[in-house]
Length: 152
Length: 152
DNA sequence: CCTGTAAATGCAAATCATTTGCAATTGGAG
DNA sequence: CTCCAATTGCAAATGATTTGCATTTACAGG
Image (cartoon, rainbow over all chains, first blue to last red; front, side):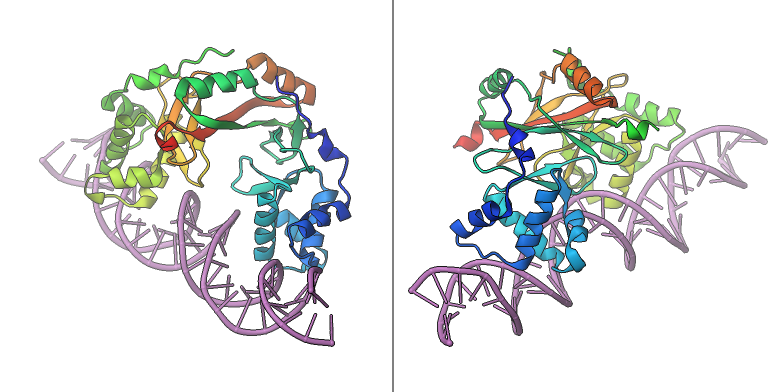
């Protein structure tokens, strides 16, 4: 069983630490970007673009800007993208140095997500890759069910 | 490890067996539906709507009809819907009585998919559900990598 | 075989998530 | 303080999927 280290996520990263990562790549620290990072910091859960947009103080900043910013910081490895049951991508901050690999238990009623420790057995993944001659194999794994609250 | 029974899929179901399932639900056997089922039968792999559309003899039948038909037969449990890396849903026939639960190893270059026997350990899934108070828990699991052909 | 009717279809327009072109703006190195 | 690449807003373009509606059709029952 893979040892997961995603608990890092719960030690909220400081905003300066996040902006530094941008600066190091000679990226500008703009109003929208600072706001996006702050919102992600405040919500240690996967957020949709729409959710980020509506958290935005005064609704400032275009949706397109959020899409572009998330692409950028995703490519930089600062956030990870997840896909749950509905069609919207969700993003979660990733600690520097972490690969952000982990999974969720998602409620199909309210979309609330619990972060999980468990992961697919590595040896088994290696075996699958080998048997089929595939290289650079990873996996996406999400659990779906009804959360306690939605069971009424 | 869960014992998977999806090998059934490879014993192609006969077309009459498929149309009977429709008839039993008082659904009409129309030209487009017969064509769709036949195409799915001929391709024991997850197909996108577009792929089904282009396999369609003479390009007959509207895209909307394919979407509607697949919704219908999905609700009837005749096909299962999968999501790989690109944004398009893919559908695969499911044998009657089977729940179609299985996973794939997908090439991120060419989207070729290999059906897998392996599944996430049931006991572990039960433990995850229990520890978080979730009911009716299932999972989606797909592996991604570079297939032998795409490694050059 | 004929018919009534619910089920299905085609077509076009609507939605939803996301992307992109472009001209105007701006952060921050020097 | 200046300059220029990086960013942004806005609007229009995509791509997948859905839906409204008027028209057609499969097939149960006579």
